[in-house]
Image (cartoon, rainbow, N blue to C red; front, side, top):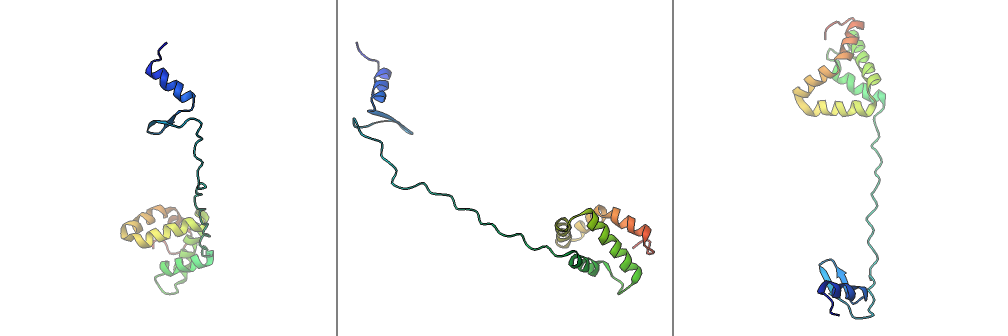
Length: 136
């Protein structure tokens, strides 16, 4: 009984003479064992953990905010208004969120500043009604 070519390949594979490889089939000497890897698998490097940068305290953030907000020297009504706005922002955002927005405003120029005025309008509006300043 003659074997077909596919049956012949299958028989060689079953006997361990023909080994499947990534690029096709390879002939192996009878009884040969598969070579063992000589190197251990490489481990991927462990990620380094960098500590998060220390956030400024609320008082430091307040000082920076007040420097940018107060434009009329040590004007008490303006200081009260700016303090009110800062407190409202701190109730709405955590320190990291506030810092992210503040950094965007500083680096973004006038268009981003206008956007911030719109985004923070609830805080500005609430403080206008409680501050004797009215419109700033």
